[in-house]
Image (cartoon, rainbow, N blue to C red; front, side, top):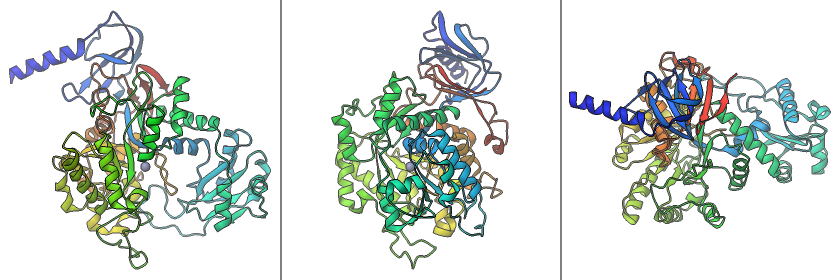
Length: 563
Ligand SMILES: [Zn+2]
């Protein structure tokens, strides 16, 4: 026992004092620092030089520093690492228009007006997805609201949209509404501006491509949101053209989060190689991040099934609601996986090239098929540390949990989905199957590494915020933001605050082979840090939803400070 204690003290001493320069760049003092490092879980000060942590400890920090920040006892965490975002869509939604929760005229007018104020003259205002929350209130487990469906018309907005063509859609994308300017461009006459069916399809095709400047402005807006919520790394699956946008922002010094980009198909990946973007894929433990810059390249992402909302997720058995209408619950195969042998071949080929794989799987059978494929990869290409990323891992059949043992699978999950999906999931797949839904606790117990993220900005039916505290709240409480149900939805799957924080920091870094530079506060790691105004360890989860980030520090630079 004593030997152990002495060893620990020595280790702490080494961790704390390595490479202590005369004057360092930044000293953070008087903090309540959760390090994520089991050897030294808590600290009071952090010394930073360049982009690196050079010291961390308790008591007095013997450094002279160019700058010192008094953390005033506030909770300080490793910067959040969101392992699953759609960055370009998020930027487009934030700078453009989000109508998901709009189902009355006044709100509709306000939102369109807001977009005209943000967007330069001549820019199209598109999508929006109005009415998505009309049936289901945000965050409720409750019943469907009664009421008629909201239908806008162009008279509401024509007066103030003479500089912006508008073509917004209803969330189910069956109906669109164009303003006068857009109708002129489309060569269509309509008093209301409502477009449906072929007319809508044709109109959507005629919306001009966004300019590079607009794409840059959208990404810039998305980075702003990341720093506001203490997110220092995002793992992104945007269209390939976004890389040019990120490179531009990186050159301008405007990337305020590290971004790991993943192409979504093998052909995209090949195009990346042609453009010379790939660093070194031959080393399976490669640092993928171009640390001096902030842009790196991650995995290849693909899909094996669809989503439950559209009944296109692949299950062993039929959906509980409407099985007669949708007898083929296996019909939702996506692009690659319509043809399972070719899909498998693609994964084998990519794996042979030592590329890390991440595959979207929602239904229980879809997840099981991926475990089969993972076995095949081991057999065909030999065993190695793959860290295969099961994206969403949404419903696992009870009999399949044991198959995770020894596989080092990374469950790339988005805990906020729990609060959103619990509203309708039992209705769709029944109580028994829901036991294996978002089963974070059971996954963890079966040797699965949790890597948390948001799926920001969500779908045409739901907005998923980037704020990691929403996800942490969901994982710990399994309640809606309104605190329902009282004990949480399948409460046996709740995880602890520390486990949730770990999954949002170290877990996401591990999933990207980057735990040697990120995810905990240790000497030698990147100084990516977030400071909160609320002590999560001392407050009830409800308070976390209102907690604010005070500082976001990226590579030793303060990129966000709350006024
Ligand atoms: Zn996604």
